[in-house]
Image 1 (cartoon, rainbow, N blue to C red):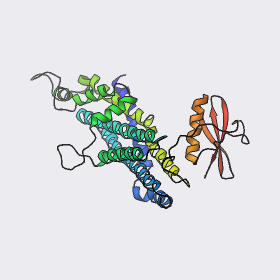
Image 2: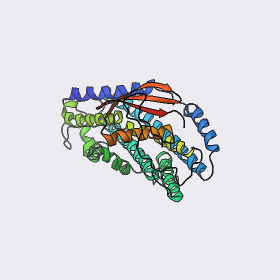
Image 3: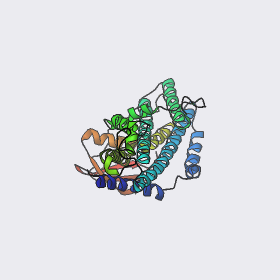
Image 4: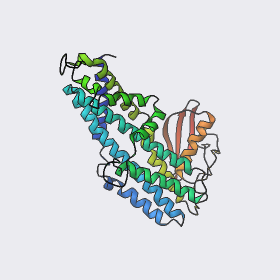
Length: 342
């Protein structure tokens, strides 16, 4: 990949992200955008019985905080992307390297938060011990507080930040070798030989100062490629983490089912539907699902178990407080009936 290709590819990815964030400002006033959702859940939660009620309150709070934290990171990446675009335009190698490392660190933070929420969801699945449920929730709450309020161990404040190495280990599970890329970027950010190379020809007391890009084209290309990898990850794989607050909301809904008990809230339901999925009249239906969210989860578990590979989905109709989804799969069209309310 030559310099022009590396630069243009990165510019396209960065501009797409910047435009996407600029055009989607629904959460800019976060409290206002979440007011209706919060109010609806609070009414339902107040009707829940003890000891289910505090579990529902805590899970909703974690969902809310996780969504907010992802929005915070999203905006920080927006400004990092803007900084990278300026660095490219101004041919500023120092700004390019610094923003590149910041970009990778924030991508790693998304992975770190996402993995922590995934850990909570897995810990709750099938769990009947009230104490273990409380402990898992507390761990997640502490992690989110440290992710937002945390400060350097050498700074003021009682809440210590999550070390970047922990976040990088989370990202490493998704992107093998990312630690090496991070180490590479650090060499060009710290005031050592790497960053010295960015503004000199590379020999002590000789050569050119602030040479043209051709002197360090290979280095700058690699920095730009790492940025592109980060933006592609954000565009594709990281999206599964950004929707994790919805999974938490589904758990809250389980707490709000009439008669719910702590010992059975998170019991695992089998993905065994009735029907054959060949038509609207015989659509797959999961009678044991307690909420619409659980019905959707069971649908995809069933698909995975039976070898269905979903490609796209469309609405086939809404009748009798149920929505009929048509899934286009590798085995053809599959009808699934999902209750709107249970």
